[in-house]
Figure 1 (cartoon, one colour):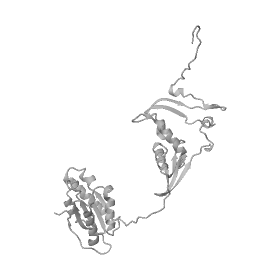
Figure 2: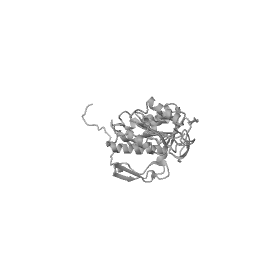
Figure 3: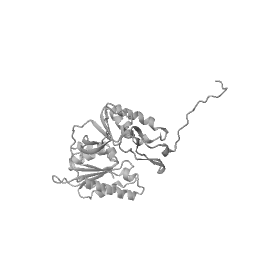
Figure 4: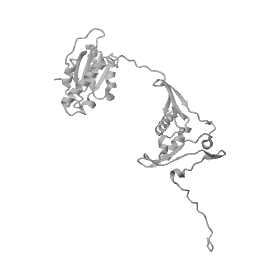
Length: 329
């Protein structure tokens, strides 16, 4: 049997009739050594709506693409199904071939019978059965395809990144360095995320703060990055390239333009200290636990609690020089 098996072909039907062309690729021996491509091709020829069913050694080659284009022109094929490798590799190839013959590129459907069948199935009988089901499914689906036209629309050349952890920080810096405007939204009062709580990073055991802190500073000072901390996404509208996003900023009770991050407002705030409870944990085990109490005195900053209660740490004694009689220096 030749590489291009015509199987069974029907005469061109009336205008608007679905005429599907099915093409099974051998992919050398990648598919054909496990899947009976001849059997699959012959079985698809009896499927309603299929006007021609063929198999060929390399459908992605120029002769393979010309085979499809010839059937479109001469047999009136108006839907195309190719059973071959992953669409990631050659879907664009076959779409261009279909379009080159005067058919809308989206009247094409691809079935993956290499990565999803021949490479992962040992039994040829089971592989052939699965391939037949996938190709029949593709032939059924292509009937519902509609013609789409590619068009160009203006886009907003600005990026919004949700989350100011190390991933969000790195993404913001990379995009901003490329010359695009970036809005970085973080729900906490500061960026840094979980990495800011780490001591060291795996596998090099580098200091987490030594890696993170310079990037945090770079985000705050970058001219292309607008930082919105203590804020959350409230609503998203639009489509890819033209989103409209509403961001809800939480009340800070301080003027960010005047703030120098001294922390005095946190400790002197007349409201209850937050967090109310502190825990020292090792995995899921709570080692120590304590509560932050009310302010000791209104005029004195600092909550009335001692972190040594939580950590068990004791102040280190300071060295004191004591003069000794008769000692010489």
